[in-house]
Image (tube, rainbow, N blue to C red; front, side, top):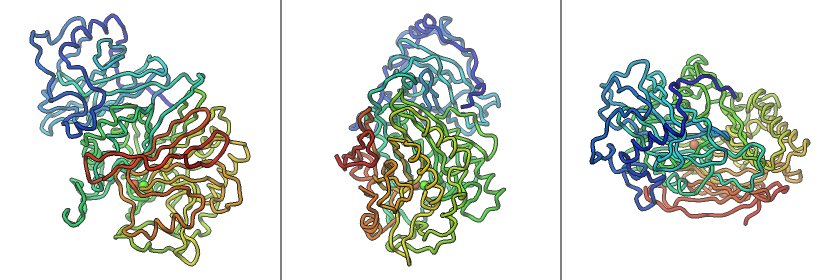
Length: 571
Ligand code: FE
Ligand code: CA
């Protein structure tokens, strides 16, 4: 992975100075709670803090003590809490982790192009008594005042606390961790994953419960924002708990505002602050069902690539990723991680490099849908062409080689859309969702055959997008039920987005006609997996009511994948 120079300076990593710094700061700041409890769900901030300001100390404190790194005063006066979007961390290595925040300042404050200096601190506990690493990073207007600080020099397999400071304003505290040593023997990894958090479809109780799951890492599999305008129907008619606050997003400012809206949610902030995330995107971070350089709204390629460049830039600005900011419409984000000898992890991009969804099969309308459409089609010649690309040749070769050559026990593919097949008999023949891997049938066949023939074991594909939880078998041809199972797919429920059907017809058909699918439900929630050398235990959690901001969570069902046995069994 490329790791170019970052806009940090005045490096500072010294225990002695850190202790002195701590002595200056610890009695100014209250101890931070890493996460609030469920019964304080409506607390105004994501930590134990009760207001915007640090409490006033009883004895006056020298604002520029000589024993701490000298941060010059800000050139502007901040009139609001600049940390309203919270903090986040992600893309850990065994010795480093990316720390993220984005400053929000009032519109009438002119920020110089050189930005505002933001100090970050990493400590061994939430009192920050021992600051282990700290530095200053400039939050610049050209990147929406976002900060991506690479906290380096950390210990492997270790939890840390972090926070940011700009001027006299302090951020909430986040908790994060490093990966174990790449060569180490690991007995367990606990991870969660989910996708699809449409603002208008419900509250983020799932995120609040995820923050309390004691996860090591969390995979976000796409649709972090939805780009659409506000719903046209009155709220009373739709029952939607909240609406988008602006029109359909068409430019960089629009995307920035949409991320800011979503990131204002206290449950989402709490979840980001709880553990590191490994994120990828799907279509709605740009435009519904886009494919490569092709949009859905009839734009020219140039027009669409301009929109894609804006969307990718805004995505970078708001995600805790170990990447350099994109400078145009091309932005490689697929990347690889490892959990000791236990898991090889590939984070994939199934949008940027794919060919267009096939349109040469007959299409059908799903009965019972309420103005929403799933692109259901018969498989035509395009999907049966092995050159019709899903990941693009480079990413496909990188992933396939990586999986085939990995010695680690489990191979996890964190990616966007359903990889196993799903078909229903609604046309003259069966129809599939051509926005998923079914639309790239021969390409999928090639990839899974190559892995199968190379003897790949313990392939587990994580996915999202269908606003439902699915557990099933992966075969090179998903509908050839007498052929070998190559791996297992776990699709997590959506955080809040709704399955696009008004009636039960489609869900019944899916369950009746897809023996490869062991479980299908359209609840909201997420999945938590306990990975050990022996097995992968997947717990499918559902929230009791997505329209209730204080909803509880329940385990709907648990599946187990045994080492060496592709396919999941009900626990
Ligand atoms: Fe979605
Ligand atoms: Ca999607």
